[in-house]
Image (cartoon, rainbow, N blue to C red; front, side, top):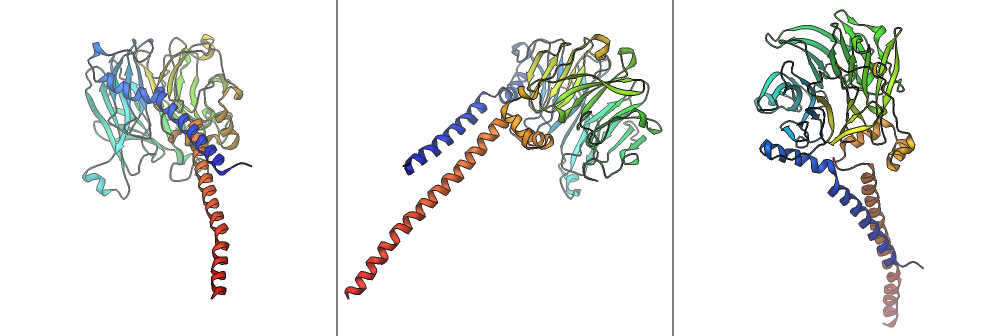
Length: 456
């Protein structure tokens, strides 16, 4: 017969095992250590900084989008792996682009909660979305353009593209629109709204996060390319509006695109028209090339660690830089699908290799230079990830993963859930035993009381 103490020993051992597993992951997490290390290295003189990343082909700038402002950061790594720049002043960093004619200056999109007298006018919390220019050598920052978004995160800008010295192309998630604004005069000169061409019954809930318009790009021929995440589509616009025949993807056609981010256009002179897309909820990077008026898949990549990609840049040498958001890493993949460079980074949103052009503008198509596809099978995934995707939707799993602490994965989540369940069972076990003891002793007391009454 199993004794109560044996059960108690089992519960205690199970709790200890879960605690050790979670504590070990926390203590050895490379991304948790990296968050502080990058900041610490940036505060030291450049000549005293140590290499924290492998050598690379140039300065690599990474924009991080975390759930906590202290963990989000914009970081630049030099070719020698040393931190050249670090800024974690804002709650989130998104699009980052090189500034033409400048070797160490970038423009980026960021956000922070609105504070001060202006915030009092908001019924709820407001967000300040803005474009800022930073010199990565001197640290000097200049605010270029900003707008107040009457919502607490989620509706902030994720991408703004520069057209010329005065004009910006803004992707506005809050209004699900694209517009061109002259930052000198403040005048909006052109605008397109997604609801003019797409039914509000599709995508996300209308009007809150309906299209989630998360990327804009001005093409060399003057057209615009736009990512409608919740419609699973990349669309093309001219000055008159939607060019429907050019649309890549379709609502809920998840085999093509599934809530994608940051599509990059490869022009004809580099083997296009082609588009390299971070196909986020399919946990991959994919390229589509336009042939005979249709989009055809020409390349695809992921490995067993890829989780919710949100950016991919094709470099001039045929390599691809990938921001693997829930994998908490940035990787460079060669033409054969091999990871040749990687750095741990909390929730990377976008990555840029300076000197290689803006995004994938100078990168060749897969067909042009023979870039080989490479994908990991489901069996190569971790046991917890396979189990989670078998039980829940990809969107649910990745959404939950995104809000986990930076050092934790699905395995640690399982350990915490097992520990909580063990505690509940243990408490129930002890309460049941306590009740049994009361019930066991109660008849004895009644019997004694009855005997005393009869005596008198």
